[in-house]
Image (cartoon, rainbow, N blue to C red; front, side):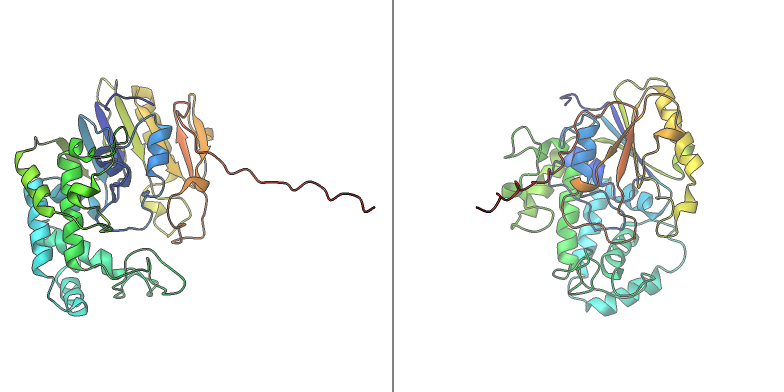
Length: 344
């Protein structure tokens, strides 16, 4: 696995940008909220297959999304604005959750134009509390985002308060703006230093003051966001050290595949391949048959960390790469009992 930082890491159709966060912040880095289709459980496997190590960082990062996540990241990628979002969330901590949800939902109906820190805070809060019992995603659910049959919440577990969400934003700011800080007490793995800052999922108490102090003095990363279709972005003339990961809407799942048809996905992958970048794409099936050149398919469905995906009936998880995978996830081998001895 390479020890060199990518000169440019591009995540197309990034959504909650789970793979980028693992690259920048280490193996404990996770998105601020759980989101449908997030690659949090597969991110380490994807990076390993691309020959990258969690926490290694990148000289430059480009996130692209045609939906609201691009606008959210345009706010969170700036440490000052990210801090404003966290402050706003803490200011909402004493409001009754259902009343807050109703107010935010009424304020943010329709287009999410004019992405201020308050608008981003509202969108994240709505996203955290909207998953669950109502099939169309419009119902209030104060559980977190991972579903369990017992609770029927889209993520079960304890409620995610705005205070907890604000703490997660502190961690995200550190991962995005100062990835080198993540190495901490996990030498060689680039993991987030829970003992010094607190983990993003609140499993340990953290000192957010340390995060804020570090953000004041750390150098700003070269981080950019494009709000628009992935196919609109052209590769740079020199793709040496450029890595591209793409997570398009899966064909035939959740009703949103029409936003990027399969032909468009294949053409976008081929464009970056022809330019010389290292390219990796997730889908429910392998895509090599529709591409020109030396492409490789890897089934990673068994390598998910955490709960299995439940948002659709599709359980396939493949990555298609234009390089041989540098690391393949191990498969569990079944054990066959020896035949019983003949009776005496």
